[in-house]
Length: 118
Length: 113
Image (spheres, each protein chain N blue to C red):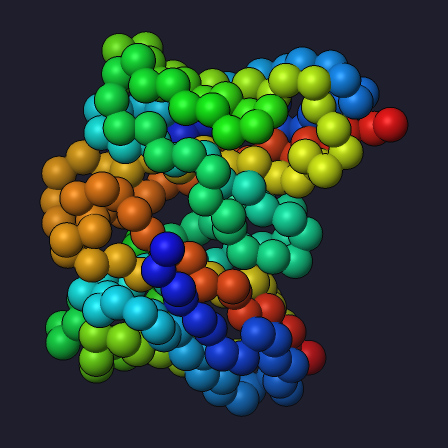
């Protein structure tokens, strides 16, 4: 199956700093990427959907100026948490799919990035 | 707005027993997924159910889909400790081009010796 990687796998940062998380599709071209956030013992919540070369679509309640998403290539999407605060501490998971594979409803999930903001 | 409800949210069972996890969803959908998540890990895809009456089995897990009732079940047969994990169902929104998934809250399964 398709492989999606995330980097870093975990990060600890100070409050007020910005953190960038990368999501790469390693063996296919991802026209669409999804970013999810998962708080402890909760489900995955979709934050935003990004299509290569266009602006991301954010879900209701997600601040687009705080969570900057860039999907500049078919193999890389980045999520930048700007001015991070302790309440942003969470497990961030990306998934990616192609327009072709989407017909079969496959999203390929990355391994996740655990962010801890002190 | 698509809503997905799973129950139970917590399930503690003994090895060797059978049980079923239920997943109800609120609007028409054409795809339903089951995932497994181990602590600290991302999602592992278990099943994709594409049509009404679909049934898929892998080992001790069997998933089924009833699109008319908007219900999917994940049946566990003769549970073993290795099945302890959180199980999520997710439903794809019909229409649109981005195929968003809406997840249930998850079922934390603990299999005791």
